[in-house]
Image 1 (tube, one colour):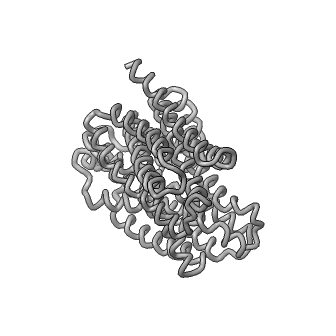
Image 2 (cartoon, rainbow, N blue to C red):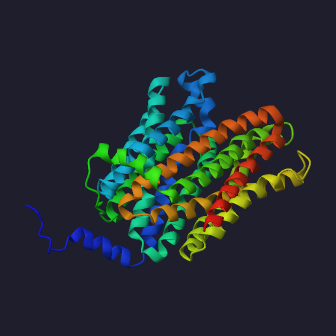
Image 3 (tube, rainbow, N blue to C red):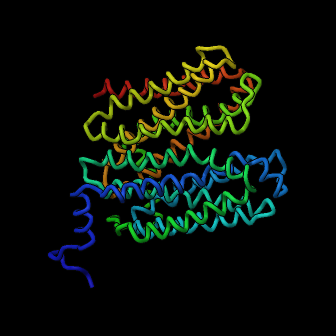
Length: 409
């Protein structure tokens, strides 16, 4: 039986009511925590790749697959699973993906040979795209005048999760086996799933099309939406610089210039968490119509961060202090442009948000992968100086592209 056009749809009415009022602070906190806890699963294995490879019998030269397959799974999920948020009820979709990542974490913790562990790594990446279903979900619940604030608050949780994952993983493995971090995170995911099942409202998408048509529409969106093209390009440059920095700094700090232990490097990584405060600030600026100045500041600050690291002699206390400040400033700048970018693309249409977010994240995630490769090569060829010059050039290129946007306006 079809519903009469004169009868209001209770689901749409509930969504309209949610958008007309501020999102409760408690629910915003839950969504931010969920993003951080889920995203951390992408990075837990990174500092443990060596011990894991040895334990499961994976050749050392192939240990990079442990991290690479997780990233591949995440990239595939961005393109083929995240768009489902425009087609499938959001609460159900998020809970299913949390179930996938939970099962994958348990499988990784139980694995004793390479193939099961690598399959689990791929599945962890696929399940972790729940993060990119939560962010547009939160944006859809927020009223227009506070959407940037809500996105910023939720993204702050995501950035804290990313930055805390590596040191937490290192510390847990130091006092137990590498299996412990996977089992511990699986328990956290179970608790998170129950919490979200109780707290998340239902949100039905308005799109009416098949899955293949949904995926096919993404190419047309990328070709037609200029805001998406530009914002994805800015963030690809930014995340390339971010990945380059965090790929090379552990090598730099452990090398002869500084000679830091793994504990010292883990403590250094914690400095980057301070950059997460940029998320709510950037969101509020975007809500006030200041996305342009915020973007220019974010791009410039990343370039300045790399320049700072070349002001003092290698290995000196001043050099270490400047490198730490650069980590904070870099994370602050990358987070600022990320939040303003998401605020801009979410404004293109409620019915398109999941597809737009999937494209945006896939493009900048590709930039991050390129940055990691470029960082390793530049450091091997020219040390930190070459790395810092390349890292600073990336946000400057994005800034030049941004200035062409300002001139067109």
